[in-house]
Each structure stands twice: as C-alpha cells, then as structure tokens.
Length: 358
Image 1 (cartoon, rainbow, N blue to C red):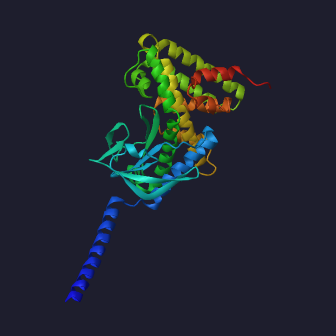
Image 2 (image 1 turned 90 degrees about the horizontal axis):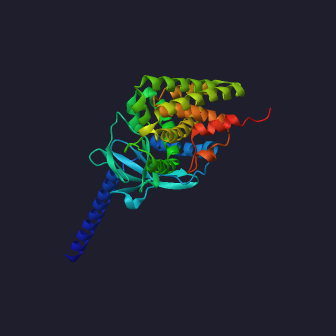
Image 3 (image 1 turned 90 degrees about the vertical axis):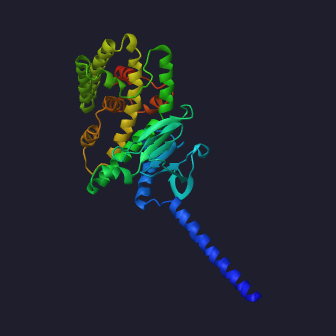
C-alpha cells in the first residue's frame, strides 16, 4: 500500500512538472512573439547603415547609439533603453549588433493601441501613417528615435512595392538618426533665441512654410531663391556655381529683411537652425539613397527621386544648401555637427569669398 502511494505521488509530481513546463512555455510564447528573420535583417540594416553614415559621411564616432524604438501595430522593441524608465517590459531573446557590440531587444506591448515613449504622452499607432521621428527626453538632454517596422509600413502599398518601401524607410531612419546628433544642440540654440526674441510656444521645421506659404510676395522670393540654389547645384563650372550661389544669397537676404522683422525678427535665426537640422539630415538620406541606388543610376536621378518625396521647404532648401556646402567646403561636418553650429547662409558667404588660387 505504501509503495503504491509513493508511486502515485511520483507520477503526480511528474505530471505537475510537465504541466508547469508547458505553462511556462505557453507564457513565454505569448509574452515574446518572435520577430521574423526579414524584420530582424531590416532592423540590422538600419544600424549597419547608420554606422556607415557616421564614419564615412558625418565623420563622427558611431557611438553613442541613441535609444531606438522599433514598433509595429501591437508592440515595440527597444534597443539600448534606460530600463529604469520603461513601463512593464520583457527582455527578448533577439539582439542586434552595432559598433562591435551586441544589444538585446526589450519588448513593450502597446496599451490601447498606443506606443509608449520616454517623457512623452503615448501616441496612437496608425498603420496608414507610420511615423519615423527623433525626439528628446530627460529635460531635452538625450535623444531617442522611433521607427516603424516593415510589417507596419508594408501596408502602405502592394507587395510588389515592399522592397522600395524598405529602402525608403531605411533612408528615413538615416535622416532621423542624424537628428539625434543635432537636436540637443538645436534646442539649446532655440532656447537662447527665446531669451531675445518673441517666438511661438510650439515650434517645428514647417512653421515658416505654414505662416508665409500663402503670401504671394514671400512665395515669389522663396521660389526665386530655390531655383538659384538648384541651378548652382547643377552647375559644372565651379566659378559659375559660386556666382549663382551669390545671387541666391542676395535673394535670401532680401527675403529675410523684408519679412523677418518686428515680432518676426527671430525667425531669421530660427530658420537657419531648422535648415541646418533638415539640411544635414536630408544630405545623409541622400547619401543612403545614392549608395543603394541601382547600378549605373545617375546622381541627378537619385536626387530627383528623393526630392519628389518631400514638399517641406526646410527639407528642399536645406538639402540644396548642404549639397553646395559639401561641394564648396569639404570637411564642413565638424563645424556643423557642433554645439554652436553656424547659419548655412553665413557659411556659404564665407565659402564663396574664399576662392582657392587657380
């Protein structure tokens, strides 16, 4: 009898162990949905491309890597987060590699369809409008970046466009990651401007376009300046390029003196800050597009395709300015990726005034 009871107890213990293991496996499977290999490969491509942009184009150390939040419709995967700030989360078995180091991904499930972000209100995840954005946290002292995953942005078009969308969002990731190296400096400059000028409480890189876009006189001057910048970019002769830049600078000075006055006096420097932010980021995005363009594609075709993807003045104008700055002053990165980066217009005036001996 006693032997039978022992056997029964052992059998029950085995069954309980099996049930416990199955339960744990079920919980783990539910808590850690697997990322597909194609999704992980795209995430790794974002990091690989960013490391290359830093070293080759921005001429910066690849580190520090910012906090990156990859997300889809139901969850986010955090790379290099400050775990003390995270809501309920789970360490996943997935990892990515950057600058010779492995970083584990941390999963945070969306609550009520909203993406959690540090020091900010959660935002609704809209599959029709996936967002790639760089922002600041910790009292505007640290950057982070959110990036939609292919399972989300592939819904924007048919399956035949999946590869094109992968390339588009890879370029957008390079753009926004470039912002992570600039935003802290830009906010510091804007805060100094606030001390001396009347500025709107909420600022973004489109505010000047939104405020003056319907003004025919402003639009005429802006269009004239943009056409001259485009002409200078396309000009093969370096002296003629400089002369065209000089004409564009004359129009920009006229535009600023005419419209950025009185309560808008601070807009001139504010525009310069946004043009540096967007110009350098668009240049990094162009460099990504250029490297990954089809074999034999002309640089102008790559540039035209990129330009057609935006109607934001700050991005169009900023890209033109930095294509010219890169041509006229190689090595500009150290100056423009520093805390007190200058006005792109002032820098161009200096460049066309310093002509090398023939």
